[in-house]
Amino acid sequence: MTSLPREIVGARFDPALMQRAREKSWAALHGIRARMHPGISEIEAKAAAREVLGALGCERLWHPVIIRIGANTVKTYRQASDPGVRLGENDSYFIDLGLVFDGHEGDVGDTFIVGHAPGRQACAEAARALFGEVATAWRSQELSGHALYAFAGERAEAMGWRLNHAIKGHRVGDFPHAIHQGGDLGDLEASPSGGLWILEIQIAHPTEPFGAFHEDLLTA
Image (cartoon, rainbow, N blue to C red; front, side, top):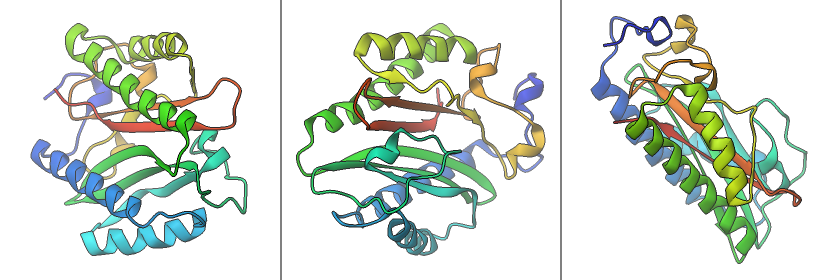
């Protein structure tokens, strides 16, 4: 499949099952989205997420469910949310899922708006658009992981947003991918193979306390 040491997979790895895990992860994300409403807290949203994941037959999590609301959307996955935040009438939130189906890892994330919040809506749309531009650059130019994130930073700035450079993407595969020590996509000095790497994009408004997140599997 690949000669890169950082792209090693296990004996049971199956690209078709990786795609299935991706599809079911997106179904889970939109199932959680359907349960979001003004007034809900991050803790309550995660409780709703557990019900959705159980109904879809998720085997396990490979990283905790992350749901960020309002000003917490500028925080990275390693940072704790400010407590007590609830979804406002005109607000934004993002969902980040790391799920295992059929022994394979899905990792998806996206940002959504409730009510009327034009600035936050623009930020969410920019995160998706930037993801698309970076993924297209990978497909057309075979850029290294490092070059992809350099490109992402340049494009984010040109679009008027601030890229969170602490978010660099990562490997996925048959669970657990961590034993292969693939590391961060943003540190990869080769062009990543399709179906093995998650491209993560997190941006923020340059002055206001909100951001947006989008991630998905890089596929040819």
